[in-house]
Length: 102
Length: 388
Image (cartoon, rainbow over all chains, first blue to last red; front, side, top):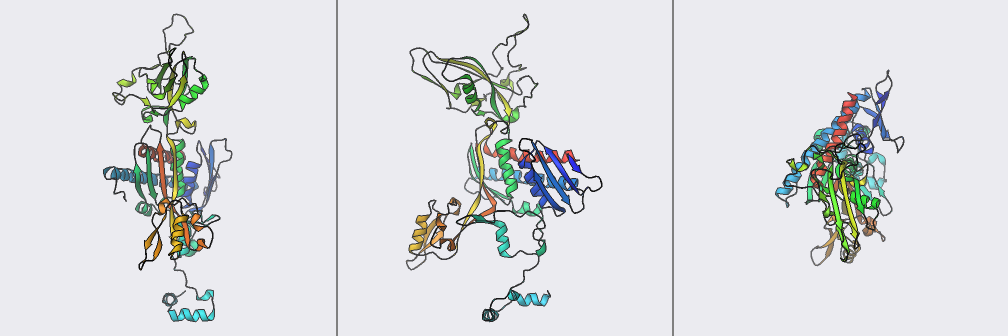
């Protein structure tokens, strides 16, 4: 859910339900490294509510698009981690002494 | 600054340095930092945690893309360098424990993997226990709780979640039976987890029906036997062995049926697929000066985890070398007292994680990690679809 203003789409707060630090902190990491972002941060308003608020302010681009791109980047990173792990495990199983893999 | 000046700065001769020393220190004589490149001390701050005797410094990671904008350095996320630099190195792997090095990733993401592993990768665990008879000293509710914590060796991906208004069926429930008795005149009987027997056809306990003459029913409604499914044929569902469930005295008996369902660790720790999953940053031990003779032996004695070793420096001299920095637990004994702080420096590499996963037996650890990464991906996907 997005809480933003109609006139200025470049800053908005997004509320993720049923999420916690796991996703919020990783998304914040991805957002922070995007040069279009001027500010971002997240908070969990109350520990008993399963929701997080993510604030995104950009230098002009719509916050929604920037957040989507951040998630996309994170997904690509995850996919790369997965394929690298599969390869590392395969290599290890084939030859437990030679552990280095790229 | 003009080009000419910059090149003349770089080739500052030793004479110039001497001249400087005579004149005294001045900021104007310092070399300019090249644009588009971070000076080494800033790079080190970003890459290493410095563990000092009282407290660590440089613990934060600078993520903001414009952190170094003033120096003309772009700190934004680039996927290509990430792909280039990211490495995984398996250190040890067996059926229930795995240790690997994950290099070139931020703590935020490494921690997300850890959190997902502990609380969001699903497994099967006993949720409902139907106790027909329990004359043992262990109370029903305590017994049920103990049963819930027994790990089941079954792939949770083959099952669905049982939601509130679902009826238990072969796709979402595993039924296990336990019938143990200690006969009169026999020594005490210990009930182990392997006495829980899988019932592939579902519950055997008849439900008391409210209406007379209605068809007899049980607590589950399986449409087919679970062992007719190819995944379970010749591969019966079992529990982790050798876990003591209860102890029975002569004449005592337990008869019950346990229903296991799919769940996640954030609901209850019994659904957590890992004993635990953790990571530590790679420890780096740097010798700041040559440590020789008596001092070398003292340093070796100081370190309880055997990080240091003594090498021969030629002509019978002994010199300290760092033999195994991975073994360092950061106890900081080596930098305690007597100016040792200035001779040895302890660091942690911020983007090198030694990740350890202990599986409880449902899935092998490498599969668990893959599942965890997939779950994080699914979370991102959910956000993207919700925003589109």
